Image 1 (cartoon, rainbow, N blue to C red):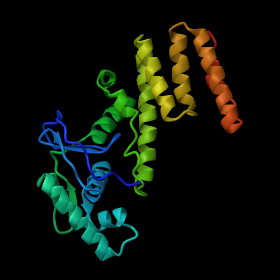
Image 2 (image 1 turned 90 degrees about the vertical axis):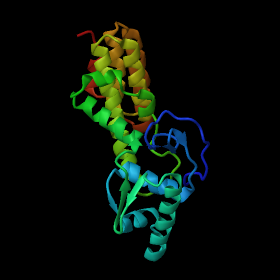
Image 3 (image 1 turned 30 degrees about the horizontal axis):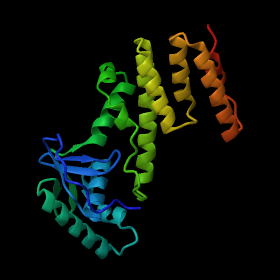
Image 4 (image 1 turned 180 degrees about the vertical axis):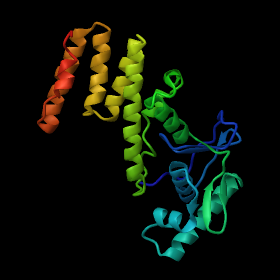
Amino acid sequence: MSPGVGMTTTTADAAHPAIRVLGAFAVWVNGRTVALPSNGQRVLGFLAVTGLEQRRDAVATHLWPAAAPDRAMSNLRTALWRVRQADPAIVRACRDSVRLDDAVEVDYDRLSAQARRLIAEERPDDATVLEPDRLEADLLPGWDEEWLLLERERYRQLRIHALETLSSLLTSRGLFARAIDMACAAIRVEPLHESAHAALIAAHMAEGNRTEAIRHFNSYSRLLADETGLTPSTLLTALISWD
């Protein structure tokens, strides 16, 4: 289904206009959430996720693919007008293109950048500033939009790898409880992802809890067999040894 029409107005911490696309969609202006109709939400969601200046006709085609071109462009003009009623500066539009204003903060941009730095090991201290609860949130859940399919898969892979990397980093620092929590978060995103299970088993082994490691290995082995008919790799099996 498409996003809902209304949102509750509540106080928020954002000093600048902000858009949340991880979890329930929301827009903040002057520190308070604002209500937008569905078409306004869809335009802002598209611009927030793609993060680029877009041609007007491309936005209209992506958001209203079944409509005639003239009708799709009319829908876009109406949606932009609705958005400007909430904040005249949140979107920058000219004759041929449209984009978010540079001052607009998007949670997807912030979390994605942190995750990429962590994976690239450019900022190991991001282990202390990453927001794991936000990393578990889906990208615009409940939105039935064709353009979102690839974006969701890209973000799903990014957050799994970030959570796995974070778990391994925390294990290396001896922070086993948090490492286990991050590995479990990665598993919740994708229950069959072997490297996520490897991160969890490695954390248990590093803490000296071989029984827990073996218990989880056996549980994953059963799940893998039931779902795919496969067995764990030799690399995963090797993790439960004391070598």
